[in-house]
Image (tube, rainbow, N blue to C red; front, side):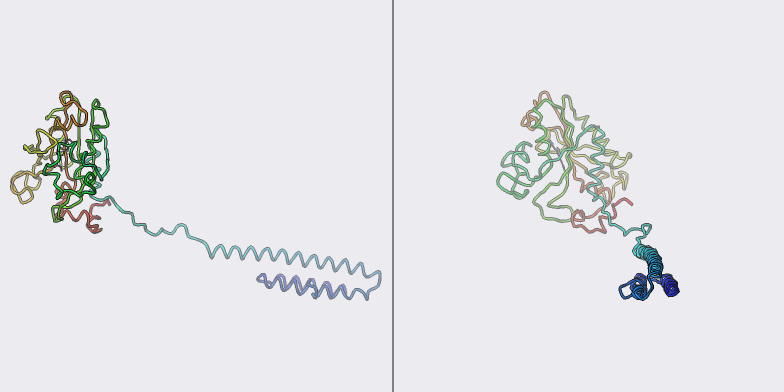
Length: 344
Ligand code: 2NL
């Protein structure tokens, strides 16, 4: 029986060694240690042994059992380790692979132009202000010296929501609101960019929605020469140091006197070409000294305070700067057009 046990132990350990996976090792355990396993069979035969032999064989059988069990457990752990490693290897993610490209949009050309102008005026101490696009009749017209019955208030020219509410036709109401909020005794330097609306039939040069930037400077002793100096700086910074400006008399209900500013044509340097319609000059913006009535309505004493204001269309500026032929290109979202102005 001793030999039998030793032989079984040898055999079992051999099989444990050969086991390649958890099923193999499970089979070895059942075959040798299970209820119908070989070792159990041997122990069943112990009844035939003598009293002296029984404890000796019993002890040996237990030792063999323990040895086989230990070998099985060790092997099990080893196989589990290997299988885990294989699994991990199979599921490994290569974090060094390049990621899938993410399409990042760019700034709309009108946004870039507006930000460039904002930066220039922020540098001159102006602050950027925004206001509602749905405006009251009062702030859009009345406060800007456009009384009821004025041609610019014609229903044809505006999108009305009610009799008293409309889509703003310019950004000036933001400035009127700012002036009115300040009790008439604080200087103002502000710039307001934003979307504006006019009831127009869209074509190459007209859009029912477009953008505007206006500027306002109110203080004691603000003069026309301050306006001219500011506009000259603006023209040179945005269009190039070699540009000249000229002011022509004009009319706006909210400024007096009013002017229009031209810049010298870069294409022909003043000689005359198709871009400047053979005049050597290109119209850029409108401006003027804030009308005393506008100051007064906003609570500023026009004998004490004066100011200048200007307004321009970033759409037009972008069209001139980049030779864009149709204003609708800004609003029809053709990515091939818009992408040309994205930074590399
Ligand atoms: C243009 C002309 C202009 C203003 C806008 C303004 C605003 C206030 C008071 C006085 Cl609160 N003036 N704005 C003045 C002159 C011209 O815009 O051609 N814009 C595209």
